[in-house]
Image: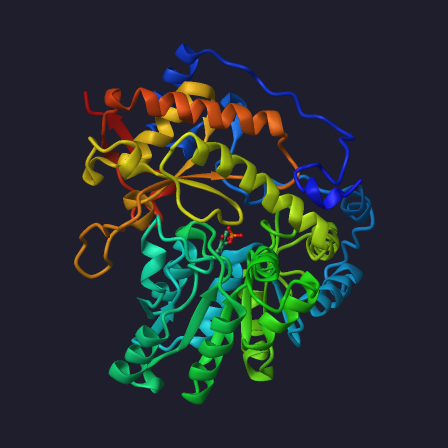
Length: 461
Ligand SMILES: *Cc1c(COP(=O)(O)O)cnc(C)c1O
């Protein structure tokens, strides 16, 4: 038997189950109305298949759970911190580890350490919390991702790549001294989980370092990116994910990482770097904002689970299964002619809401509306990635109008089975056949920061 032919077959069996509630359409209509048509405001109990996010929603392994029992809850110098340091070094190779309660905690440390107010921070497409912390530290974000990333139907296998001409232009126009660093997200969440090639990382690193600019990796889904390099880029097929990951990191100076994604955990994160002075500055900040430098807001047991989950994510067959689940859902939707972002990305499938609901304008929050309708149709929870997530320009107050208006069907690691994905696909296909019934939304409550989490809407009838 050649098991490579069945990447979708689970490389694990189920030891504990969590019952799901099946609700009626009428019940869900009421639930979404009460939630202000924002899937973030639904009660998880009312959700059948939860594809809101892959963040912290993962199933841990028995080895991770065993690690939970070995939590050393000492205030200082927990042994789990040292395990985490070793695991981080083994996977990523950075010299210094600064733990944080989750990714945004690490982003605050790095932004405050490396950005002087008024400096520019180029990046391959923004990520919500990353940009927020850069701006709070006085930085000005500049998008330098390749144009293909903004075209949902472009088939480029590495749509997360930085456009070197755009990066060079920023350096020339603003001056290298006025650039804090460049952030490289691997994979690029908002572009549809699209990876960055090793070749691109190498070139960006060369250009940045020739100009004395640091490269900061958003390593949140770096193992997924490494897997895509393995299967899509020439010369990497025979390398392990760990070898590829170490090479990726070798082109960078520091990283921020959410432990809630690739590491199969429910909470955690870290910053890491190679520069001693940067580490000292971050350690002086971590005690103010997160906790002592040997726990950074995590319990000892959580550090242990993260160390173990990180090493699991470097196993090639675990990552092959992970991506096979996304690919399975992607293939089903593609076969039915549903407009989805191409090619298949890492952590989920992104439906092009503008093409799905052509009659609803962007100003009426088309993706937000589609996410609400999908929930009502089948109890499947997705999230908006479009105008609501993009927020407003800090200076003009105008709404950012991203080219892409999507709903994200994000796949938690090791949680759902093939039959769940069949239901998700069939529900979307049915909804598409009723698209002439689509209606837009009106925003009735808008929070100041990261509005997509708490904004409320009403249906325009
Ligand atoms: C989730 C995420 C973050 C933020 O991490 P949290 O753990 O949610 O604070 C940063 N960057 C990317 C790409 C992410 O997906």
